[in-house]
Amino acid sequence: QVQLVESGGGQVQAGDSLRLSCSASGLTFSSKAMGWFRQAPGKEREFVAAISSSGGTTYYADSVKGRVTISRDNAKNTVYLQMNSLKPEDTAVYYCAVRRVLGGWYAENYYEYWGQGTQVTVSS
Image 1 (tube, rainbow, N blue to C red):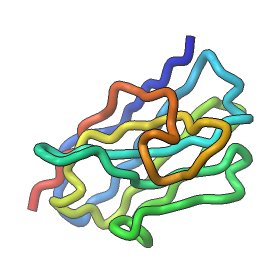
Image 2 (image 1 turned 90 degrees about the vertical axis):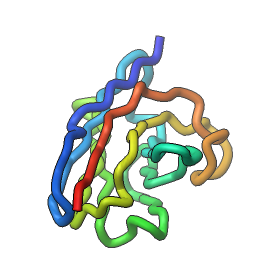
Image 3 (image 1 turned 135 degrees about the vertical axis):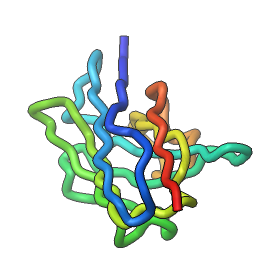
């Protein structure tokens, strides 16, 4: 049974930083590409970042490029999302997800397992 547990969310001020973590179990983590998505109140869930199984390739949404870094530690079965220069519009529930073997990187339907999410609130 695949389990993904996100942590690290919280309430911060604009300009602050946060590092989100997603701990995975029940899968061969080192063989799976991973992604982060977010869902703001009243909006659809959107892609934030993704990383290949080895960590050698990363993808970012234009809205976070330059402020966010995705990384992973395969020895710890954990993927991270370092977020800097946070803005109020970054306020959302952040989810990590396991990418399917085949498919694209940016759409929800390319991901097959999801965590419960962690809330990030950025105040101005």
